[in-house]
Amino acid sequence: MQPLTRRSLLALFAVMPVIGKACQPLPGQTLPEQTHYDTIVIGAGAAGLAAAQTLQDANRSVLLLEARDRVGGRVHTDYDFAPHPVELGAEFLHGENIATWDWVRRYRLATLAAFDHYRHQFVYAHQALLPFRQWSTMPGLEALDLMDGSPIDALIASWIDEGKPDVSLAQFLARQQIELSPDTRRLVDHFLSGSYGANLDQLGVYGLAESTYAGDGDRYFRLRPGYSHLLAKLAVGLNIQYATPVVRIGWSPSGVQIQTDTAQIYTAQQIVITLPLALLQANAVEFTPPLPASKLNAIQGLGAGHITKLILKFDQPFWPRALESCLTTQDTQFWWRSGWQRHNEAPVLTAFTGATGADTLGALGREGSIRAGLQQLEQIFEQPLAERLTDALFVDWQADPYARMAYSYVPVNGMGLRSQLAQPVEQVLFFAGEATHPTRTATVHGALESGLRAAREILSRHRHRSAS
Ligand SMILES: Cc1cc2nc3c(=O)[nH]c(=O)nc-3n(C[C@H](O)[C@H](O)[C@H](O)COP(=O)(O)OP(=O)(O)OC[C@H]3O[C@@H](n4cnc5c(N)ncnc54)[C@H](O)[C@@H]3O)c2cc1C
Image 1 (cartoon, rainbow, N blue to C red):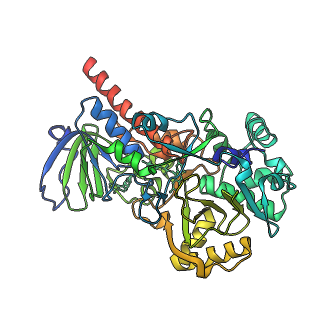
Image 2 (cartoon, helix red, strand yellow; image 1 turned 180 degrees about the vertical axis):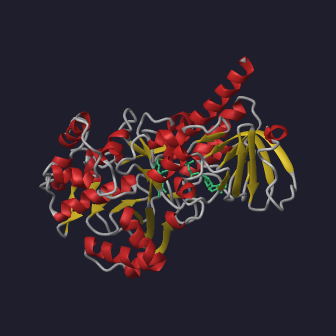
Image 3 (cartoon, rainbow, N blue to C red; image 1 turned 120 degrees about the vertical axis):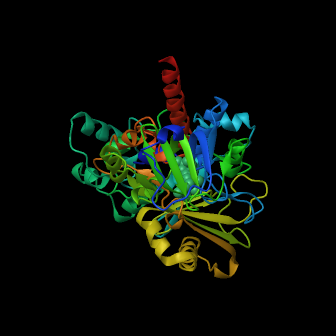
């Protein structure tokens, strides 16, 4: 049985001279200022920063337009809540071999091991708090030990090899006659919900096989100075326009014209779009003309997964010293110690809740979620806790206007759509962001790699043009 990690979840189962005719000013619009760049990158999250840095290093003129007053996007560290950083968005480096380490080493950032020993992982099921060694023997869980070569992994692989239709993981388990007790099913569903932002009945088996994270490694880490520190380092020296939401993108094969919410116009030879999938799905930014059908098909065919984080601070720790994390059958799903391995760890627990569980907490709002979280912790640890709560944060990423989601997933019949989403349009619209990575989705390293990929596509386009 492997420790609980994302894998082991599967394991546990210029235009403007040229833009001319095609990009006329929009009706009634004056052009308050016209600024031209070789490339404009929309969004200063991991993907946008990696793309901009690569292009700038290649001596291209680059502007980053960012809606928020900060960089990082879905990476956001709080430095005030506790004596140590607390992650509101991305928290872990998923693997010892991932691309993020290139920057971690370049910037000499210290890391802290997380989930590094299963004896620190607990489960709450059947009204009991059990250490890993006991719960890993729960009936049904052995069938879902999905690491490479494990029964379920092999079953999915042979299902695909035999060309059987894409089905949800829930349907797949039913067809394989893998029966789970209600508690086991909730545990598996909760782990999937956290890892993919989607439930058993939302995830397609072909998509699961596609998101392999192969070669990334199974060890998890936090960044000692907080994840935002890495993104802030990436942003150094880049030309970033903050608090500048893009509202409209006019494009033609000869270039791009961008309009911001204050009717500012920027022009570029090409742009890199790193908007979160949910914003593309909601047409939060208008494309003129509309994106081609294949792109719209990819946007609508992928899933935008939901996650909330409920972060509770107490007067003192009340959990066993050995407990690092606890997967539960309760609605809050998965708890962990936010300051694990830190010398100045504050008594802070994070509930990481995904998919329909996140929607439930989102509907309860901050106060309701705090109440629900406290009640569930009281049940697990069998003691009253309300008086001991000293502070709380509730982060609902679906309610964030510049994310509206946590990370993407591949539903039934969605295989291949990530690559389709990544394809450039007319060599002027380039796409990056976690949802465009074919295999390392839903991660910071996937987003970073997608930014590098988009930048290289642009640089190779330039090389071809100069050669011809
Ligand atoms: C709760 C949570 C936990 C996570 N945990 C992990 C983890 O432990 N490890 C991990 O590797 N990954 C994790 N992830 C996933 C990871 O955070 C994302 O995959 C990654 O940060 C996405 O980067 P991105 O650049 O694709 O998108 P984003 O970071 O969302 O960047 C897009 C940027 O576009 C900006 N933007 C939006 N609209 C506009 C507009 N109209 N005009 C201009 N700018 C705009 C946004 O403000 C944002 O800055 C987690 C995510 C969440 C939400």
